[in-house]
Amino acid sequence: MHKVAGWKQVVYQLTLVLVALFVLLPLWGLAFMALDDAIQGWPLEFRLWPKELTLSVLQRMWEKPGQTLSFLGLLRNSLIVAGGAAALSVVFGASMAYAFARLRFPGQKPGLFGLLVGALLPPVALMTPLYVLLTALQLRASLFGLMIVYMAMSMPFCVWNMRASFQAVPLELEESAFLDGASRLVAFLRVTLPLALPSIAVAALIAFLIGYSEFALGWLFVAKPDNVTVAMAVSGMLRQTHFGASASWNELAALALLMSLPVVVIFILLQRYLLSGLLLGGVEVED
Image (cartoon, rainbow, N blue to C red; front, side):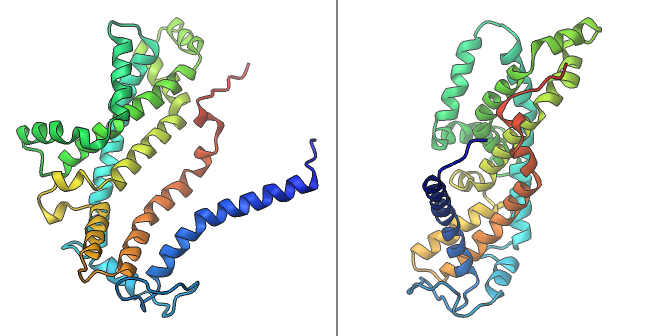
C-alpha cells in the first residue's frame, strides 16, 4: 500500500478543509439569514450566529411565500412540472438514444450533431419557437405546456447520456438474447435497459433539477398564479428586494432553504447510485 508523506497529507487535508468551507459557508449564510428575525430588509452587519434565533420566518414562508399559494402548493407545481419533464425526457429519450447507439440509419450523425447543438443552445433560444408552438396547441398557459418546455431543454442531454450507457452494454448480451428468440424490443427491455438503469436514473435526476430550478422561461408560459413554481416564487421575491419592496432577505433565504430541502432528500435517497461505478457507464460482466 502506497504511503503518503506527512507534509503531503497535511496539504491534502488543508485543501479538503478549504473546499468544505467554500461549499458550506454559503449554505450557512443562507440558513443564518433564514433563522434570524432581526434582519429587516438587507443584512447590515456580519455575524456568525443569528441575533434573534427563530423559526417564525420559515413558518411565514411555509404558509404564504409572497404568492397566492402556500409553499406546498408551489412545491406541488414544481414536482408536477419537473417530475413530468424528467419522465417524458427519459421515456422518449431512451428509445432515441437506443436507436443512435445500436442502429445504423441515414442522417444518424447529423441527428446526433443536432442534439449536441440543442444541448449547447441557451434556453432563451427556445423561447420564441416554443411560445408559438404551444400557443397554436393552446397549451401555453398550463402546467403541461411548461412541462413540454422543460422536456425540450433536458432532452438533448438525456439522449447523449443514455446513448453512452447503452453503448457500454456489451453487444454480445443482446446477441445472446436474439439467439434465444427474443425480439429487439424484448432484448432492450430485459437486457440493455436494466444494465443501463443507474445511468438513466442520473439522466432523469439532471432533467428533474433543470425543471425544478428554472424560472426565466417559466414566467413566459404561466398566466395564472395557481401555476407558479417554487423557483419562480424565489425569483419574484428577489425582484421585489431589488426594487425596494416589502420582501426582506431573511424571507428570501427562508424560501430558498425550503426549496432546497426536496433536492437534498432526493440526493440522500440516491446517494448509493451516485457512488456506483455503473454511473460512469461501465458494465461488469461475470464469467
